[in-house]
Image 1 (cartoon, one colour):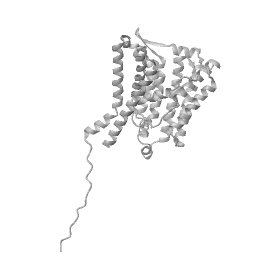
Image 2 (tube, one colour):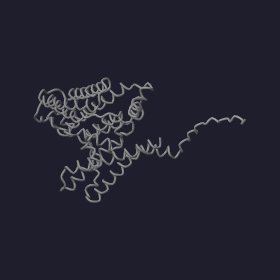
Image 3 (spheres, one colour):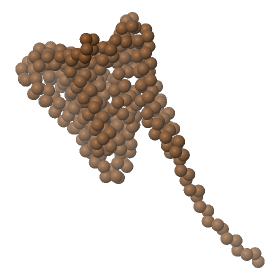
Image 4 (cartoon, helix red, strand yellow):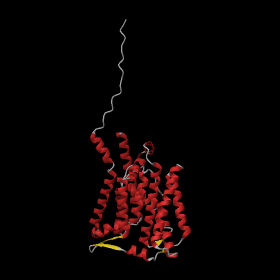
Length: 345
């Protein structure tokens, strides 16, 4: 009779800790799209300076901020929404209706400009918060809700006026024509300073406040954020309220840029804002991105237009073609980096 055999219990091998260098590489992947955008911008700027001597003038660089101040503010608001994993298609229409209401109130009804600007900002913020509340409490896709918001805002602008309204209000005119000189050859506009202030505030909010950390957590995994007890509803509504407020502020800056209000202003500008955010390195799935990357994205779109203007013979539609190609490249880059991160996990 043979002795009973004992079976040694099998235990699963303990998971091996990930090498430190892999953690460093994984963390570094977050910065790859931003660095790629910075390199792309530097290369395009260098090519412009090499081909066109006037391209190197400091004012040409500053004009990238002056001519795109309203888009920069729109893109900053869009960054908050995309970081939560959402999208806001209403920003261009809110900008347009803001210009129409501004022009209509100050030109036709002679309301004081400060009151009109305050009304526009409050209205845009409340509109954005309302869309955020509908998205969260009714669990409707952001694409659908903000598409409805886009039609509502654009339709309201047509109801107020179908014609372009020229603004002659002295406050708007003074702000639009105000220039702050640095030396004899460089000046900045009020709109540019406002846009840079918005970027600075957004940077602080996203990286040094509880709201900012919750936005990143919400975009990373909403269910995990809920289980951790984070204020998901309040954060999501706040993100869309910020986007609505930025859209209204962008409308005021656009009004200063054109000194007019028109229902057909900013058609398709929501796509420019989304493109700037994505090219700036923010993941469309949310949870990863930088507001400074969005600044680089806006500058990249601006320098494409500037190069085409200096070239002189190319149609402006080439701007759209180049932006479309860049957008595809950066989405593919995000896909590759996302797949590598999942593989490491």
